Image (tube, rainbow, N blue to C red):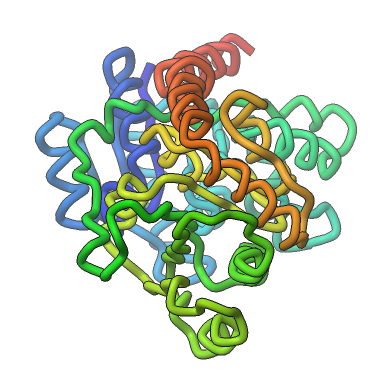
Amino acid sequence: MNLLFIGSFAGSENIYKAQIELILLLSLKVDAIVVGNFSEEIQKVFDVNSIKTVKAFPKKKFDKSYGKTVERIINDNSIDIVQFFSGKASRSILYYGKKNSVKYVSYFGSISLHWYDASSYFTYLSPKLDAIVCNSNFVYNHVKKQLIGNNKQKATMIYKGYDSSWFEDVVAFDYSQMQIPKNAVKICLVGNHRSVKGIKYFINSFNYLNTEKDVHYIVIGNKTDSEDFKKLKMRIPNAEKIHLLGLRKDAVSLIKGADIYTQTSLSEGLGRAICEAMSLEKPIVMTDAGGCVELIDENSGIVVPLKNSKEIGKAISKLVNDESLRKIMGVNAKKRIDNEINIQKNADECYSLYKRLLIG
């Protein structure tokens, strides 16, 4: 079986870790080529593992030259399956490329797909597409509703895979650098400054903590150190215990150094940062935001209602006040990653899907 993976790999390895590891595992069973824009860090990973790469990515919405370049790669290498990790890249390939016998598969991880959006018929709803891999049941059910008739069969659910061993060498951040006492309980959240991430509800939950312990909130992500969050923080008593760090390259280290991980999103397809926190044995407090609730059970975290700072504060307080519960839930969270959201299961299920598509 010859596979062509199409994606964008321009950032740090950590961001694309699940995709990269999936490709490496599948390459043990198939002949693989990866097409994309690569950061130096990620290019080195593929080179070390002897994965053939081609540097190419569309320069505009419909890039005929790019589409034809990929078509030549498909023909010259007798590609059987094209796996898209990028909707932007798939548009030019699906539009300009000939269908022939190749099977096209897309990955989808949110609920932003809608049947009434005309642009989606050039990507995820394209008639040339043979399958859509959804990263959670929440996303799967949404995608199926956007597909018509027999096309509903194109949707398949395969959890995006992780492995706790990826994070074994991560060094816990030393929060004393921020003048946070060693015995303080540190609550971490990672998310960019977008309304869908619900960060303001997390910050406001500090008002509802019920504990005698010293608690510090750590907020990480692009523009989380913005003026509006700073103003929100200053309206809260003990505002100095809320730390708005902005974008950080050491987010995983910061998570490992914390005691509890919290995600207060309004919607999540699955949740990369949550999976990373679980891999690092952190108990989870999360909102009922969709696919993310599939990651944990009652033994590994607490689910609270959307937009409810009081309930968020209550759940955090429960874990703050019970160190034993925190540790037990953290251990169970890691077990769920390795048993339920495992990268090997991800690779095996993708390989099975590809074989089914080729059999017809």
